[in-house]
Image 1 (cartoon, rainbow, N blue to C red):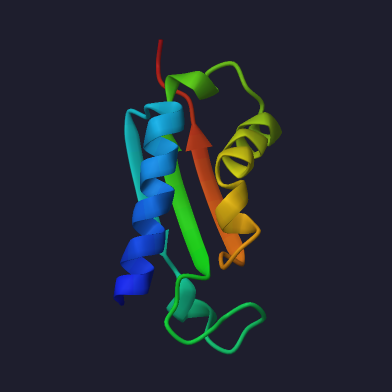
Image 2 (image 1 turned 60 degrees about the vertical axis):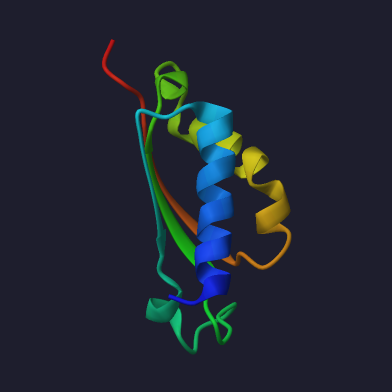
Length: 93
């Protein structure tokens, strides 16, 4: 991974951790898997997968969970991040 990738993944991780206080959080740069596709650029940091478990998601629909994450990452999504795959779940009560 490049410094640029670590920087973007780190920024995403920090924003999500601050906003949702998740039980678990993983941010994966999948940019290289999309080489040559729309939105890809040299250096990566364009396509990410987020896997997160947070109690805030317990009573939210899948769409509401996605909207909450997109709102938290609006700056990144309007900038260099082209695609964001989300695997979001609540925590057991």
